[in-house]
Image (cartoon, rainbow, N blue to C red; front, side, top):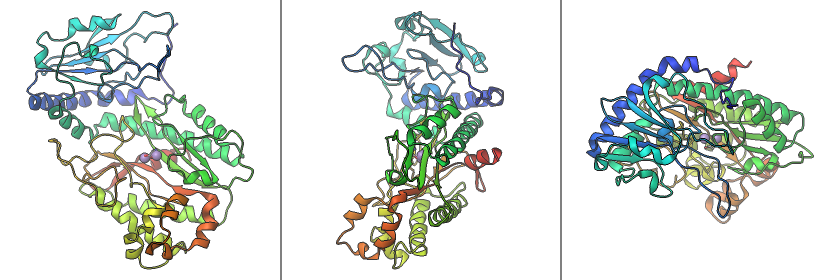
Length: 452
Ligand code: GLY
Ligand code: MN
Ligand code: MN
């Protein structure tokens, strides 16, 4: 029996209405990429599973993001798209005959009319569909060994890749609809996770509640969920999940996403277990985060918004007696960076940290980060239909606070308040927004609102 991989969270009917325009946009982008590379065909490889060292099984397969931007086949290794301008795109569909694993199901769905589909049973059978003039081809994909390139010498040429990566920064209506649905899927999981936290469950059980609710196993999540109870919330990418519940739960920071055909959501919420100071701090920080969301629109320089976040955090530290001194001093002396050491956010797409965040244009010119802001992942001015995160945070990270010892900024920190906050870990609030001409569509808040 074939395994059906569809999910109640995927509304393919809504996606189908936008697919033709998505494909047209991809054609245009690939025409430009081929022209820049002086090539006639783009051969986009889905990828090969990576074996575990000295063993006979494989890491979970992650398809080439360039392949899955074309079509919703995220679990299809050894397959190819062959794009030639003006011709129907060939999809070489590897449907292995295997009794160890369940083979991919037959091609079906809204996307099939757009491809000339050729099913193969052995990876080597793909060669017959690759244009013989290999020098006119460019190969787009990952190569662990040279064989999948089948003699194509130009692998991921920068001339073409810059155009593709820059183009991916602005999403089609199809991609945006995927991401709306991905936000909805994750929001349902966040509600379940909060419930598990309030029931006193462990990090592990909160994580399991999340996964069960969104219908993802660990390998299907867009990234490993970050589930930090109490002080663990201060670890930016906390990777453990304690099996035992915390004896005295105070706070939960959960950063967890979901995906629809690999288009991701990336959402963080922070909860206080009880009413009181930390709950009030979260509410105040949420106002700060929403203030930042209100600043975005086409034309805004994201790096400027990141710098503005430091100013807002300086004020927040003062307002809540966590630090003293002028806002300028708190930024300039590195105090805000000690409490908020990551970037304001990043592009989002088939990759959680999507490509192209630093690109000034499609030639490969880079917009550098502001000095002293090495963790910022997006420096590009915002354009309509970019999708990105707004995720300010504030944490008690002892490693960074200790580094302040002896520096001028250290004297501005109110250490007794810091000591009081330490058991709560930290706060991050992360929404996914689609940029519009006059502001944004908040995919995350819209999704949570539908659940009320
Ligand atoms: N979940 C990782 C991040 O927020 O970028
Ligand atoms: Mn996140
Ligand atoms: Mn993020």
